[in-house]
Image (tube, rainbow over all chains, first blue to last red; front, side, top):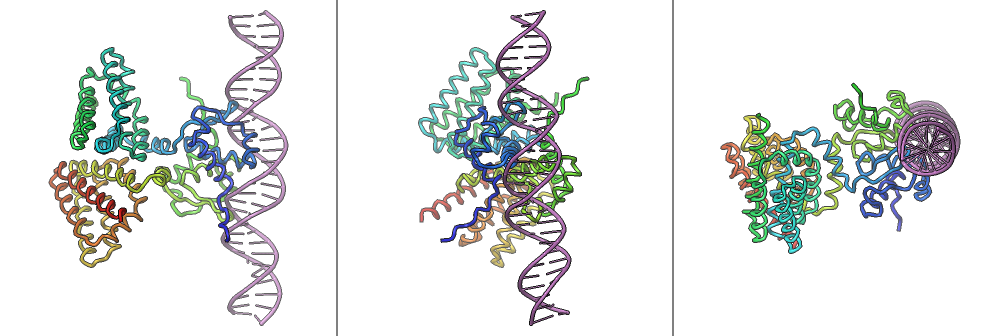
Length: 229
Length: 229
DNA sequence: TCCATAAAAGTTGTAGGATGATTGGTACAT
DNA sequence: ATGTACCAATCATCCTACAACTTTTATGGA
């Protein structure tokens, strides 16, 4: 039996291994990597080869190098950095439209497939939101609000959907923060949360989609009004 | 006025410039880049620095290097390559679900914003599909079918949505091809096309979304039936 | 002349070493 | 306690050399 020759360049092999180490959590986000010298030994390649591999992952957004300090893990996903650049060139509204398209689909799928664990998470973030609302703690409110939306998408069980949504939400974070902080009342969002949670509990796909839909319309109008003034 | 310090490393500066050259079309897809020696001179950096920049773009999927031959432009978009990896790890169904979420949103927006030019494009691809259907030319049918779906998304006017959808569709191409080739009748798709086009012409957002929705359900059932057997 | 083969030139891949720049910590003097 | 000077660790950049592969050119025999 003749084996296919290993045509992958050393650099790509090293980069691939490092990606796996990051993805598998052996190199955790925020942690510092061993210094170049040590990695050279471990991988058995020259400094140039190692550096080219590191640079590829830095450019992809997985790693970050700091001269004089070290190299640390920045993210576990390539998609984030790639989306970031695209989103930069898009308008806020365009990004929101895509995000809502994903969330609407997610809500429907969540209503269909949600597990007990999903429901527990959703209920937890709803009550957290309520507490924050009563205490008028804006930061906590925003955090738990985002948590709720993410929990819905996670309940969809579609990993690609989850990844896309979370990255887009992260990119919109500062915007969402500013927007919600500006909003005079917490009533609106809370109503959505309760209705949506109810629909998902009852596995009512149509209602779940509708509530997300309504939410988008309200938000859209609100933004348009804001930008007009 | 204090200026922000130039924190970008040489490698990142070179990579950024190369990305721009590719994006602006000065280095076209399929073309070969000047050899490393020449680029070293042009950018005024050492070979290591240049190579690290090139390697970053290779890993991102924009370039491709061939030892002994040269380096050529492979793609103009980072998003495509990044999505590709994620999609690889996802199932076909997961990818389709996301694609449909995008298309549904696109159909609604297309119904709202479509221009005369958009309508002309849609009509053209519908009639192309019809011709292919009568001639029973499967390849032509598939090509014009995909063209129709892309035209809808383009009519949405949301560039981020367009980019995401087109990349995902490209990734699904071979699957769509196999699936449609296996389908016993062309009737189904054609019905959708006509109804959808009609809804978009009449700017009926709800109907447009509904037709896409129906299409997804049919396709989903069909796939499930196929995979059961 | 024509063609297969060999040689040469051009290009990317890998290795190793040297120096500069930045960061983080330590010891010392005030 | 504080600020300064120094030192060590680490990444950034550059340089040279050679290996591996591809493309082009030259060569020699039919």
